[in-house]
Image 1 (cartoon, rainbow, N blue to C red):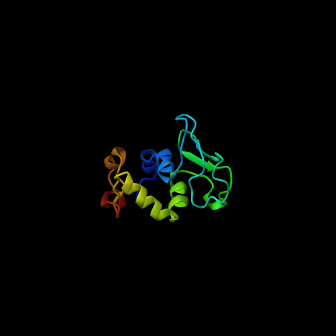
Image 2 (image 1 turned 60 degrees about the vertical axis):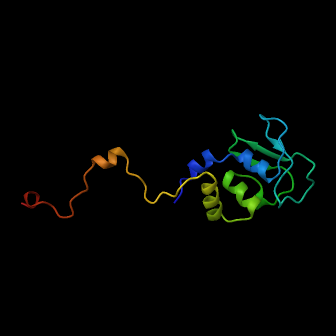
Image 3 (image 1 turned 90 degrees about the horizontal axis):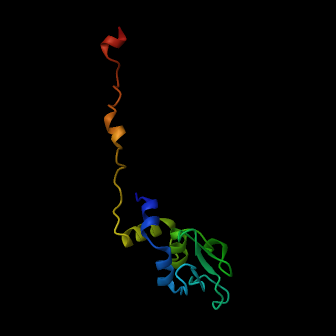
Length: 125
């Protein structure tokens, strides 16, 4: 299991889009032609935007509904034509993140002793 929020915070959506072929003219206005292979319309218009501090994307032109906006996972899925599970694994590998084998206990959880399975004799009396 991977921590999805860590992947979202580690992988740059703008860098992925540029790797896919987007060309952003201004560092603070992330607008480009749509770099996705599923885009069916004119590629000369700047219909692809990244917004919400680089966390979300949207194609305002001719991408199909299943590839028309979302986060870094949905972009990767639309770009590479993979399912969600594959996108998570491949993006985690790009970020050099290992899967979590077990959730770590918080300090508060570690302080609490597990409940006994059978009541103690003093309690039964």
